Every structure is written in structure tokens, then in C-alpha cells.
Length: 112
Length: 420
Image (cartoon, rainbow over all chains, first blue to last red; front, side, top):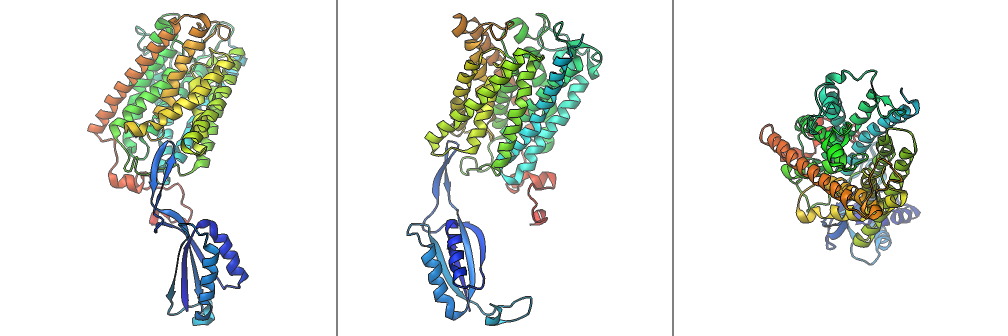
């Protein structure tokens, strides 16, 4: 099993959710977060003063997937989140030892 | 004999003006960062509590008691003695003295509350409470006496000797609070992160709600200052509306051109700047004069606010740029646009009569109040700072004053905020 973690632009979250739902994905977790990558911060003018904004708002999406489905889901997220411009975000895949469904106690793929 | 119509309007106006201070608490509370929002609001509520106690004990008496050489009232009305069943006002327009005392109390309350915006997020609460008591006594009361206590030529020196015009508090409330705010900001120093971090308002809907409450209450502030329910009050009211509306639009116009976006903070700030500019002038100029002053105030106060970063003083919520600067424009505006067709007891401005006599008086009043308020406030704040301390610990400032000073937080949505 894998954990797919994607950091994406907030404006892309709804599109990704719809694409994953249409594809029959079991579940996902989203959280609002902030950070910077190569995009770095940017300057903003507010009330006549200029500021550097280092941490840019992003959304973190986490999806647990079977090994067999992982590549497909990654492709789906990447193609939906891609706008071609700087700041589209990153995605990484980490191995997951086990998953437990708390209600039933099922383990492994059955818990997905 | 008491005029019931006039009395009803002044009673209602007193309630309207008192409503402005909770409005200011919400306006300011939304403008600071979430971690110190309650502290900001508490400062306004302290102003209501402390000022009211002082006003009853000796504040009213020293402000409106028999003038001692035009500088201060006497102690003849300690504890509001000798005011029950008394009346003030010209024959035919008399109102109970207590209605007048209540109306004037609400002005003192909001003036000192305004100052809290200059020292947001970093003042010790107890020191602020002490400051309110001392500042009302040593700064507000004398200035209000100078400009408001008319006693047939023998009252406060600005209104009775100099003859400068100030309908609803351009000097007493606006220039006074602006100059004092500058002194306070200088004594307390900058917030940690000033100029580096944007420190944007944490809740703009609150700011707009507060601005709306201020706008609403300002009709009592300005039109109530007619102390009668007639055409002068009507002129003051429509002038207030015109100037506030005009300034809100010019503020965002300038902002859009300079910064690229029209902000809600801009439209709220502009409306307040417009209400400020018309405060001294609303009972002396005609509606077109109000329109001109409002249009100017939106531009100039906006420019003034942005200058604080250049000069490097952290007047956090722009008391100097909005109240000080637009207050001065309003006082000067009287010297230019005042017309006897609006107020027969008023004098005429430069553009109406061709004489600069009134303008000169206005400039003297501006300079005297600004200089006295700045120096006295600087002394009071420095004394408090050197003795019990005025500024919070850096750690408390970074954590936020709501939890460190008030054991509460503005947004305890999970019920766990204080535990994290």
C-alpha cells in the first residue's frame, strides 16, 4: 500500500476531488497548509506598503492506495493539478506498512 | 422651559454616540491579528467604564463648570451636583443639563478609546486603564473646556476668546486623538515585525460591521451637536452622509491606482475619514462644501496612512492618518467654506467672505490643540512607561494578549484553543 501526498494550488482541489471521485477512489484527506518551494514567496502591496509573503497557501491532499492503483491515481492528480505555471506544487509517494479501519478492525487492503 | 423635541433628539444622540465605542471596539478588533483581538476590544470597554466614573465625579464639572480664565472649569458640579432640574441652551431650545452631560460624556469616552488603535497588540492592560484615567483628566477635560464650554464670552478660550469654530469636535476629538496617538505610538515603540510582516486585519467583516456602527453613530455625534432638532441638525446630518460617502470612494480610487486593488479596509477607512473631516465643519458649511471636503479627505488621509512606514512610527490602526489628518483638513475647511447661510452664529470662510480672519483662528486652534495634546500625552505615557511599564513582554506580544492577559481567545471554535 502507498500513501500519496500532493501539495497543490487551492484552486485545483475541487477539480482533483471530482476527478478522483469519478474514478471511484475510496477516500481522501485534505488540509490547508502553507509553504514555499522553488516558487519562493512573492511581494504584495497592502495599504501602501510592500511585503514579502514567504509562505504561500496550498492544500495538502492525502490518498491511501493499493499498489496496483497507485500509478493511475498519481497520474490523475498530476494531470488535473497541472496548469503549467510555477507553483503547481509537488506530489510524492511513500510506502505504508499497514492500514486499519478503526470501526471493524480490518487490516491491510481490506481497510482501504 | 424644556423643549421636548430638542431634548428627545439629544437623548437619542447620546445613545447613538455611546454606540460608537462598541462599534470602534469591533472596528479595531477586526483590524488586529486574531491573537490580540479581545485585548483590542477590551481597551475600548475600559474607556467606557473609566471615563464614565471620572465624568460623574469631576469630569463634567471641570469641563463645563465656570471657566477659570478660559483654561478649565471649576469644581462646582462635583458628583454632578447642581445639575438636576437645571437646563442648558438658548430660550426656546432648552434641554435638561443632564441630557447635555450625558451627550458630552459619550464624546470623552470615544476620544480616549480612539487612542488604543495606535498601540494595538502591545500595551499592558492595567497600564492602559491607568492611562485612560490620567489622559481624560489632564488632556481631554482641558481641551474640551477650551473648545466646547461656551459661557457668554467668558468660557473656554478657543470657543469664546479666539473664536475658532468647531461644531462637533474636530479639535477636541479628532486632532486631540490624532496627536495623542502619535505620542503614544512613539513612546511604546513598534510591534515586533512592523514593516516586515503585513499584519493584515484578521476579520474584515468585523471591521466593516464596526465601520457601519461608527457611521450610524456619527449622525448623533454631528447632528446631535446642534443640541436642537431643527434645520441645523438636518444640515449636519446630510453633510455627514455626503462627506463619509465621498471619502470612502476617493480612498479606494487612490488605493486602486496605487496598490492595484480596491480593499474593504480602504472603503471602511475612507468612510471614517469622511466622517472625521466633516465633524468640525458639518454645522457651518453647505452640502457642496461637505462633498469637496469628503473627496479631499479620502485622498489625503490615505496618503498620510501610507507615510507611517516611511517615518517609521507604528500607529497600528492609523489614528494619526485618519483622525489627526482629516481632523486638520476639516478645521481648515471651516476657514474656507463656512457660510452664515448655514449657521447664523457662525462666521464666514475665505472663499465666502474673502477674509482670512477665520482661517487664521482655525489654524491657531489646530496648532494649540495638537501641540498640547502631543506633549502632554508624551509626558503621561513616558511616566507610566518608566514606572509601572506600558509595554508587554516580547513573549506575551508574540503569543498574543488574549490568552496572556485575559485568559480568553476570540475564536475558541473547538473548545480547546487555550490548551494548544
